[in-house]
Length: 124
Image (cartoon, rainbow, N blue to C red; front, side):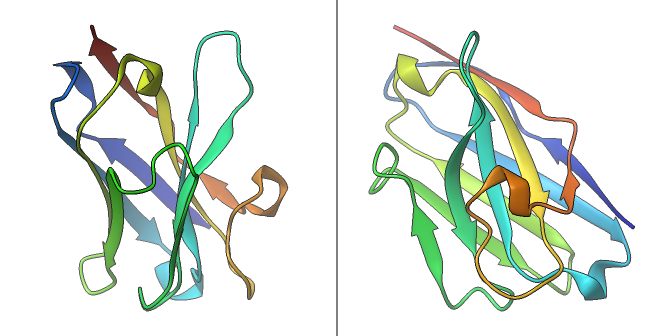
């Protein structure tokens, strides 16, 4: 099992920045792709960004491309999401996720472990 704990959420004005962190513990050697998802009130959880095991490959949702950056440090068992130029529509609970097997983590059903989420609120 791998435990994931997010932090770094908060309230920010539109145009501002936040950096989310996700600390992994447990059987972290088994983790391959990691990703961030988000869920806004009344909406389904959606993919935000994914990163490969060694960080060489990243993928972003069109809605955040050019504004968000996903990164990881396997030595520190930490995943980050740098969010710049935030918009009110970015308001959501942000979740960290991990998978064991090959391939990128872009679909909810492919995640093997989830964090508890951290709230991001962007005011206009």
